[in-house]
Image (cartoon, rainbow, N blue to C red; front, side, top):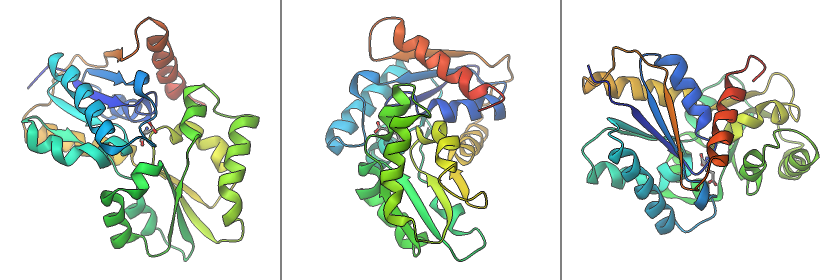
Length: 257
Ligand code: DGL
């Protein structure tokens, strides 16, 4: 049994959608969430730069005595997870767009994979595409995470952006949409309005938290509680970024989310 916290990181608010799932599935655990708001976005920056930001975030979480790290960001995982696992002794759990479960859904339609430009062009996703992407359409969504960071989860700005992104595929038979960036589950309701109700919107959050639970079990690191405590950290100074993270978590946990 190990009462140290689990560390989560993302470029900003997105990883809170994964943290929310972890609080539900692992109620005995406590968490530290690091939002790298100063360096947002990761999705369009050179991979070497994203690696440095991710390593700095991980180091901050290790200084706070985290027993395991969840890279709650598809982009940072694509860039840094493999290297960090070689460099560090603690469990590092990463994410990838949920293309595999989406491709295995019944039906002949295609799978639209929404993710950042970096996630889509890096080798990790290309390998996933080679295995499960025969009928997939990768869709880089620059500008979308900024809507979430600005608290615009619905309304004209985000709707216009989504309409432009989806327009080229209006005549495709789509069976599933993969939310391949941890910011996008916050836009689930708005995105779902662009598709018929039988189109599944799939994220990798639950799979990631189950993998965290497996790794904690394997390493004998599970906590016996009391849990449910979350400490937020930001790379920006001041109270405002922390308040925004707290607000995002309460939005995520509200029954309408
Ligand atoms: N939330 C991140 C992801 O899952 C990236 C957003 C960004 O910083 O561009 O890919």
